[in-house]
Structure formats: structure tokens, C-alpha cells
Image 1 (tube, one colour):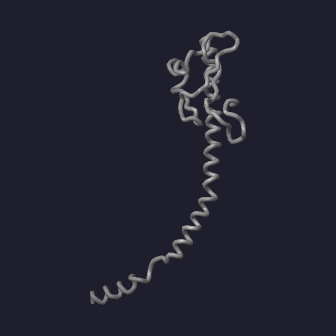
Image 2 (image 1 turned 120 degrees about the horizontal axis):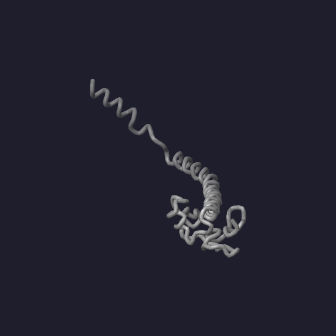
Length: 136
């Protein structure tokens, strides 16, 4: 009886199931087509998200610089001074360059004390909407 079950099992599963090479190639072609449609949209959305994060980080830094000036009557000498004085937990990262040391520091124009009245991105090139990163 056991040998009869084994023979029917072998007949049922051996050589009758599986995919043919043509079926596998069709599935791979469909997957490749879907990837060619989805991949550009994905990478485009990554660039847009970096631009939004950059604008937000610059906004936070500029508000923090204004608060520091309102409290102390002078601008900070370094961005790490904002962290040391507990105005920020850490210096924000420029999402386009991937580092927190690429910020372009703009000194005050009106003769106020301190070294940093504004910050700009140190990234080169332009954003997804055509604006240069130096204009953010």
C-alpha cells in the first residue's frame, strides 16, 4: 500500500509541474517594463524630498539665528555655538550634500556682532524646479 502511494505521488509531481522558459521570460519582461515606468518617478520624488528637507532645515536655522540674536544681542560665531547654548540639539544636515559642514555662513551686514547672520546651502547645481541651491 505504501509503495502504491509513493508511485502515485511520483506520477503526480514529477515532470508535470513547473514553469516553462517562455513563461519565465514573459514574467521577467513584465517586471522589467513595470520597473522602467516606476523607477524614474521614484528617483524624482527623492530629489523633491531633498529640496523640501533643505528648505525646512534652512528655515529652522534662520529662525534659530534670529532667536539667538534676540536673546543675546549678537549673532553666534559658529553653528556649534547654537548647539552649545541649547538652541539646537545638533547642527542640521544639508540633505543635498549629506553633511552638516557644507553650510555657507553669511556674516551680518549691519555691523552687528557675531559671525553668522544667515546660512545658505553649499550644494552646487539647481533644484527640481530650476532654482539654484544658493537662492534657497
